[in-house]
Length: 256
Picture (cartoon, one colour):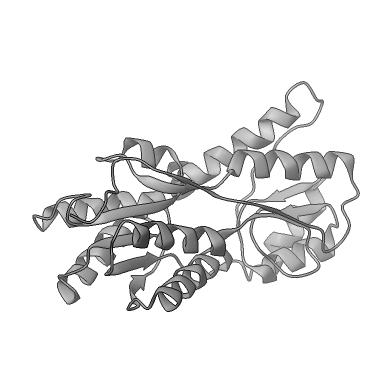
């Protein structure tokens, strides 16, 4: 719960849900599952669902189990085919981030990826598609959507490849950590290394310098999922994809 409360993604999900529930006689409850393979915990949540469940995160196996036990589920991440989902175009967003850095004249574009989950995998595939298309080397590492992963990953990449001139980092919290690691080595952001994050969360605005990032419309996605459940039933396999948008701030600049 400490990690969830400190991660800006979840506060944005809650904000989107609450804009729809305001003035309605519907209570919002928050449930967490520590172990995705804990079938009893998932089934217990399914039994308590009344209007519906917005799945903010979780692997396809968890989503499938929840949907089997309770058909009133909409996921905010890419998931198994049967589970309705309102998701961001993560792969194209990552591709667009690398494309933008390439247009700035950057040619050693590294990546600090997220975990091996649905969003992390999609963003990784977008990065790899871009570097393949532009004929760039794949300079990447990763681990999880946490600030310290961004810091450690950036340090590792810079030690291995000192000539890196840009980084795509899979979320803003990680990107803020990456900026700290880059400046700790004496390099300047954006002159020596330009950085693009993902999400457009409060972490991007508060970073120093403020981060260029791919804006994921989390609030819109969460409110859409909530309306679908209120209007229900939501057909199995329903899909709605939201585009992501490049937001340019001070962490990127043309290659000197």
